[in-house]
Image 1 (cartoon, rainbow, N blue to C red):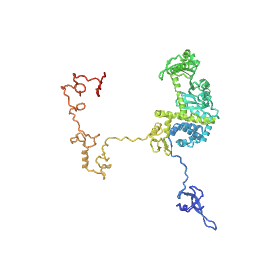
Image 2: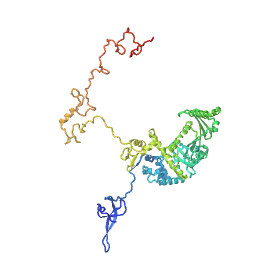
Image 3: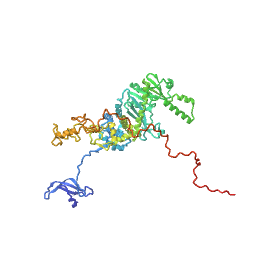
Image 4: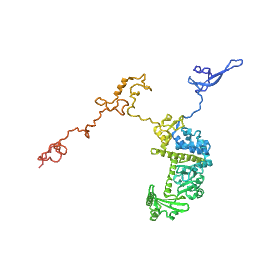
Length: 631
């Protein structure tokens, strides 16, 4: 198809030809370079066209852009991703010891995204990953929707790798570490897995759940292992399997009443370094048998009034009974209130029940001081904070997958997120950030700290450097408190007062107005370098009194006296002192003058006592009508 003349006349590089593709669009007229000539026997030479070097678009030559590799985004969200990366390096090392590198990076990247963006769905995880520095710290992680589902299934199907990962963490538990064990229910209404079932709370929630048991190291203040159980599995049944499968061999287990020690007697016998502290029920026969309500003394050094009693019931078995007076009063009030509302008060039952108000009894295989046993169990509430952060802060209160393997795999990733969250809470608490904001607010502020990807990463960034992108000072302060960046160098405060001796107001050395060289000779461009002008300057710089005479004690040569020159005369030490107080401005009153009468001076004349009194009432303003009496 012939090319229009107006297109062929558009300026373009030499040795090129314009070709018409015949299709509408911006690339219809292509410009190709001439690479040579082909000779045909018995005919004219034919040109050889090479590659396309541009296009004629809107009557203008546009060259072809060379294809380059996409370098990626120039800026990413830095704050929250950097905090997670700082606190999770050992977790990544444990994952790399067990899983392939690609899976280890994907697990850690997905767990990090769940911390930095609580409640993120699987379809959005990849987008969040590409917008944060997690993409830089953990490159190449596959976080598409299909990749995440496949990852969950691989993790859930391979129980050997999960057990090996937890073994790394359990092996770091010390003999005297306190291990808190408790469970939580998580909503799961899937119809295609065997873990979803109605729990004992189904009558309240009206939906099916799964049960998750956690072991929490009180000294390290973070979870050490976790395991998923069916929702209808009670804690007492899951207790033995949890301790055995996770190979807990040492430490002091602190559990609730739902985890009876009889379930793990055999495991305790095989592991002499593993101990327990567990509360027993109030209707246990041993309370009455050993008279545990007859207390020995009161604990000291704790909040509240707590009575205690300690009894050795069998070889290696101790019972510790405690009664909190404040809790007993609250329980007694609640019991009487319910009896009044229902009309079921019975004095004999009340007197029998009154003995157990505020009572809690622990069973342990260790001979402990009563105060140590009491405080050990009191710390158990910290595991409840982990579950609160698990469900509220990380928004992991329900499952978003269906199959058994997917549920187990997703909870493994959630466990990694829980460990990171506990570490973040610990660091933020030490930095005092929770006195000013909530956990969610802190994460949101950290996500708003963006940084250029070209910034050097060999050392910590500096607050306020040129690589930050629209990061406000408040967020920079949070980064400094968390140890994620160094504080900016503050300029030295300006010193007030005169300049040091040897410099005048113009900054010239020597104080004589002339620029001098290192040898002390005046510069050729200096002014006022004569000895006469220097003498005049020295005389003028001497302080003077008000009479125009030079003060005797001021030095005539050398350095200027320190401080501001005196403008007032030096006081005479022999002159009488000024009277104390403000100078009097009014005349001194005459002591012989008569005193002024007490009270305010009268402004009206004194009434005459002989004058008749004024009639009572307001004076009449109208005349009295003439009343005529008819006969």
